[in-house]
Length: 585
Picture 1 (tube, rainbow, N blue to C red):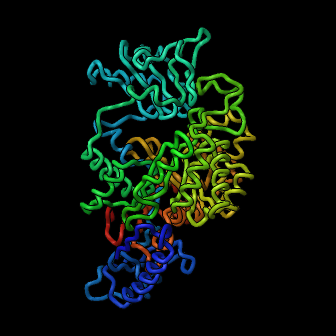
Picture 2: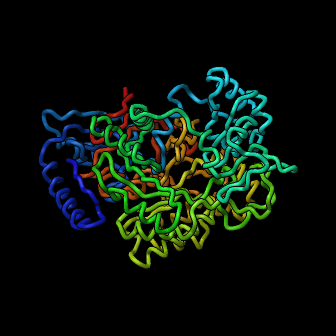
Picture 3: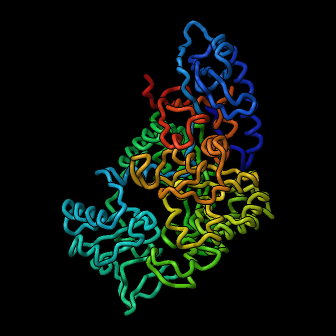
């Protein structure tokens, strides 16, 4: 059964619609329970995330809902003549997993014409550039996507000279979305020289003689022509979304929050659902720049023809989002204090530099107040502590007009919340969308720049949980198909293992006091992800009446050795009672 509501819990009539939906659901559960289930999965270890029955042996499904959860004997008694019975052979079952932050369309499009190999060293980058130079037309820009300096062995960006050597006479851009390195030809084509004034929202890094080194921080408008690739068609987007969702199914993901789409992306989801081809429940974020004046920001939001919650249980309008700062892996995150003197990795030396603030504080306040007034859930990208503080301050201002708690305002990333920020978020009822893989992949490099005092606030999951803040787990997956080697890895079991162990790629442990338990880490990828979508009453646990989303896995999540958690595989992923991925024998 699908319940459709334009405004879900919010907006005009939202509370009434929520009550009606709840009453309908209460009426559905007994009716379903009186009929024989379509399918029973039994003889398993079912980790339900349901307080009333945390561990079960069997589940029964009718239609797209769970109708019974409990012991083998109790559930099997509900079987009818046509009920299909599947013996789990003591395998472990979890609720369907939720990635609270990904970019599936862009991730697949990046490899539409060929796989992008993992790039861990500058020679590997140069080899990729040479390969592209040999295959692309002479006048086409060579783009190397999402190279993060924190993940390079050399702990520095490639130089302009190294790009020139790899592809002489060619325009080359090594990019990561917040910083770019340009070859000499690319600098010329972008019109960047020693006479180019420093932009207000970024920085052109210069050598001692005042010439551009090739490294550009922020200021994407200067690179617009270079970064404009071939046009992406509606057909391309449909292929990308469908392909990526199948890859998500293969690791047990049944729901995602797509964290940045415009009208074209929304149309893609609508079309795929219309075709009956969505295999992942999708909560899609609407992105705005929040530039101009505060009044222009308000008008931009007023023109959006829908609000949070419009849709159904397969495709729903999600948050309203903007980008407050850059990235901590790039050196453009907006910090509380300057980066300091250990910034060689980022390619600049400036003891006063705090990062890049992309949205003025007044615009953030206008966005938060307008979202709150119109019934929009709001989130914003913040990676530095200073940016998170500004966002929470804007939420606090909006909260004086109408409480933001019911709209579940959110912080996207929020990598460095200090105790003050955590307390303010707790008081406002603000949730966090966090990416454990950044601790694993980037922690070893970042800690050398920021030092132990600031690193004490890096992804403080234990402190957030202890404060009662809802923390969901996501990947920020943006490039590639591979669940473990893409940028960023989207394997949810890797994310859970990182949250449990706090281990990094070099074998060290960062802030072990911030570890989570196995149940808490699983909650990040189930109930808490559902909470961010306002669907914690519909999914996130295995309990009667909820959507029948679950995953059968290769190891017992609760009892296997902890370092085996990252290697757990999905054996069967079930969405609404139907297998969307299955390799059970």
